[in-house]
Image (tube, rainbow, N blue to C red; front, side):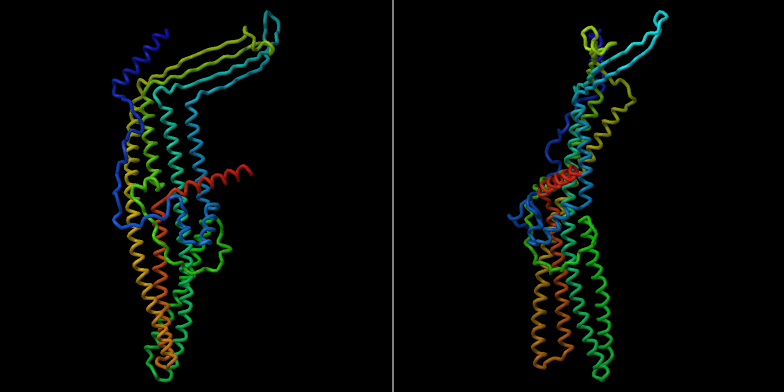
Length: 478
C-alpha cells in the first residue's frame, strides 16, 4: 500500500515536471544590473567626511546639534516608521515558523451517564493527547517565503534610515532659512527707518521748492515696497518656526530664542565615487532588497506547484480513572505521512508564477531607476554647489565694495561733500548688497545640505538602533 502511494506521488510529480514546471533558484541574478559611471561630471573634493559621521556637525553649531537630538527623539513619523518595522519583523517571524514543527497538547475531562442492561451507569473519562505536525520543505517553498519576508524587513529598515536622512536635511534647511529670514527682516526694518528719514528730507526740500514732486513720489514708492516686504519676512520666520516644531513633534511655543546670523559657508562635502552610493544610499539598498524579495517569491511560487509532504503524529492516553491515564494499556498513537499533489487548479499556480516574475521585472526596473536617480541627484547637487559658491563669492565682493562706498560717503558727508539724502542712499545700497549676499549664502548652505542628503551615509544605522532601544525602554517601563 505504501509502495503504491509513493509511486502515485512520484508519477504525479513527473507529470508536472514534464508539463513545463522547471526549478528556480532565487537570487541568481548576477551583478548590479546598471553599472554607475566611474566619476561625476563635476570635479569633487576628497577626504574629510566619512559615511558614519554626522554631516550637520560640519557647521559647528551647538544649537543645531541639540535640535537634531530632539528630532530623533520626538519626530512622530519616525515613531510610526518604527512601529511599521516592528510589524514586518513580526510577519517575518510568522513566516519563519513554517520551517518548524507545530506541537500541541489537548486534554479533556468528562462525566457521562448511560443505560447498561437496564441500569444507569455514571462514568468519568480522562484523555490526554499531544500532537505534532511538520511540513517537509522539500522544494524550499517555505524557506523562500521566509527569505522574502526577511528581505522586506531589511528594505523597510533601509526606508526608515532614508527617512532619518531626509528629516535631518529638512530640519537643517528650516533652521538656516529661519535665521536668514530673520536677518532679512532686520535689514528691511533698518531700511524702513532710513527711508522714512529720506522721505522726510524729500518732503522738506519739496516744500521749500528745492526739488520737484518726482523725488518725493519715488521715496514714497520705495518706502511702500519695503513696508510690504516686512510682513512677508515675518511670515517666513513664523512658517519656518512652525515647520521646525512639526518636525520636532511639538507645538511652536517656546521658539523665541535670539537668532544668530548665518554662518560662513562650510567646505563642500566630499562626494567620493559613484560606486559608493550603492552602500551609502538607503533608498538604493531598499530597492535592491525589494528586488531580492520578489526574486525569492518567484521561487516560492514555483515550488508551490510541486507536491507537498506533511508529517503528522498523535498519541496519548484515555481512561476512566485519572491514575491509570498513562498506563501502557491505555496509550494510543498514530503516525501519518500526507502528500498533496496539485493536479489541476485551472492555471492558478502557473498564473501566480507569471505574476511574481512580472513583479521581479518591476522591481528590477525600480532598482535600476534608483541607481540612475541617485547618480543624477549627486551630479546635480555638485553643480549646484559649485554655482552657489561662485554666486556667494560675487555677492560678497559686491557687499565689500558697497561697504567701502558707504565709508567713503560717510567721510565725504563729514567734510560737507555730500548731503544727507546721498548718505542715506549709500546706506540703503549697502543693505541691499547685504540682503543679496544673505540670499545667496542661505541658498549655498541649502545646497550643502542637499548634497549631504543625496550622498547618504551609514550614520543612520547607529542612530536608528539607539532610537529603537529608547522606544523599547519606554515601552517596557510603561
